[in-house]
View 1 (cartoon, rainbow, N blue to C red):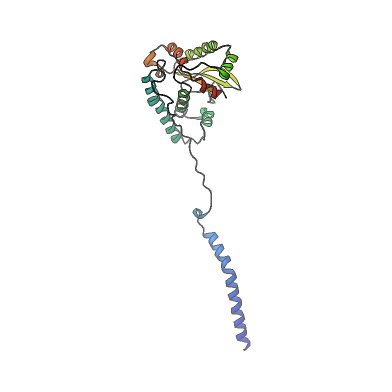
View 2 (spheres, one colour; view 1 turned 90 degrees about the vertical axis):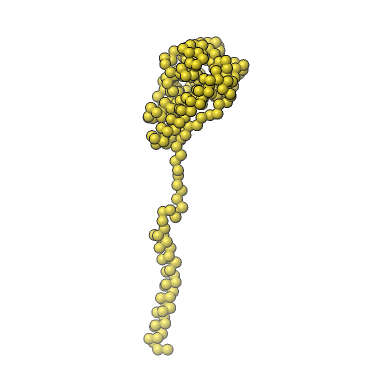
Length: 247
């Protein structure tokens, strides 16, 4: 075999080896540059906005009679409360609110639009209200809640006196509250649909009992006699539920 032919064969073999070794590297490099973002294994986080929901009424509409009549309960739950739920969720969407919890929502109440704040309060307050009431005939505050009330206010009668004063002293629409603040029980009130969880509220603490003193809560039965409504309401407090919220 002459020299020229030998060199030709050697050069051909070298070219074949280079091509074989380089092809996977080139293929990997090409794949890396041609990969689309949708093909990459990137975790996508979807933010789910807070949505308020309406709790199921824990009793029949007429279960609180004679203290609270069935017609008032029906209208209060299905008209007023349902509207608060819808309106706050509409506001959350329109205002692009991204708070994850109700607690966070109320902790930033001062930054919310009036629609979001007012309807958020109305949604939460009524969910709370339905649950701290129950059919009449139950025992008054006993056990740890009874001891806590006696310790904070002297007696149940003195508690009722102070709570009634808060309910009656709230001019216009609002709520009366019993809250736990750092382990201490306090009584106060808030205007409109404000509640003690809001950073804008003068009364701070964790609500364990609340009374709606908006006229829509009592006017069909009691007309302008809020004091009669408040007095009758003590008969339908669910003290077992209040005790749970005391912790």
